[in-house]
Length: 154
Image (cartoon, rainbow, N blue to C red; front, side, top):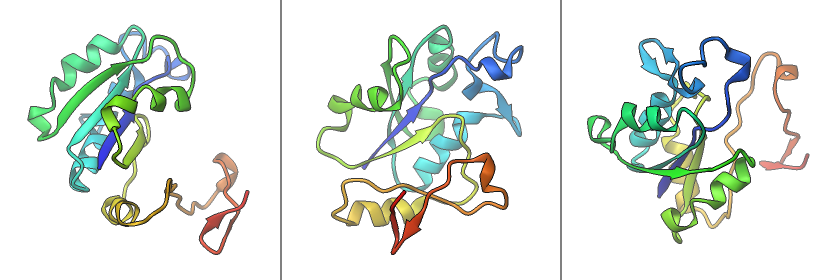
């Protein structure tokens, strides 16, 4: 299984912090935000990871992570020339992924629990896609999934 981390966006809502680089490199507890994504994937046994980069901060991402050796992963950088959305970014990874299943992380999302069980279940399933959801106290701040019999119906 492979991993994809989307490192896009301009971080306009976090300015002036993002004037010098992408929001995914802002430190959270002394680590770049997207490093948590890399570590989650690695802990799930996923070490071949593509990072989708673009815009002014692309070079800074490569300078920060290199080829992934310090994090015990293999990183591949794929450039998205202009922001055309998540589906477009994933489509750019066709050659990287090949026929393997893959996990997608948004580089500015931090998941507090392990994704190992989720990744294992997905890899062993015959499903084309799975979405990781979690309950929150105030769902009005997030997208709300209507779930019935373990399937998203709305």
